Image (cartoon, rainbow over all chains, first blue to last red; front, top):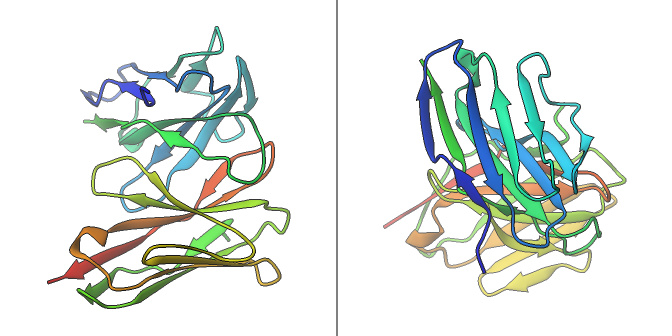
Length: 116
Length: 109
């Protein structure tokens, strides 16, 4: 079974440029998460989708970040314009349902963004 | 105060040593608990879930104390391949997986 697929793996852009990341979750997983991980820290949630609905975007910097999951399957995360402080690894994860106990989040390999 | 806190580390231990990691969480309504492992420049992967009764998987033992809001991970007879960052994760029903900052372990020959 294919895992969570993200692209690109690496991206280097100049500040003020736009950038987009793509994620395809595990088939059948209705919950999709975008996390940002800075060096030496744990992943921090940006946005969570239940199917096509963004149910928690409280941590998403909405002045420059946007996300969509139009058909409730794959998702894109966009930054426009990018700032130096956006350099991080952007991780996509998916899980099946919202059940407590045993629910596991599966992660993609991430996109390592460097803003110069 | 962060919702999930862990030992700052890093832990540098010799092969064969026993090492324990501690984690505390602030949300008393949290329902599920996990330890994830993250290798350098890789994505986090589930190591084990943590149950109230405690659970063991080979050399790994996880414990949960809901009253103290405390989670632990014990690794016995550590191997070089155990070197990684260990992330404590708390899940709240209908909400999100909240990660601790991670504790880095280096097992030395």
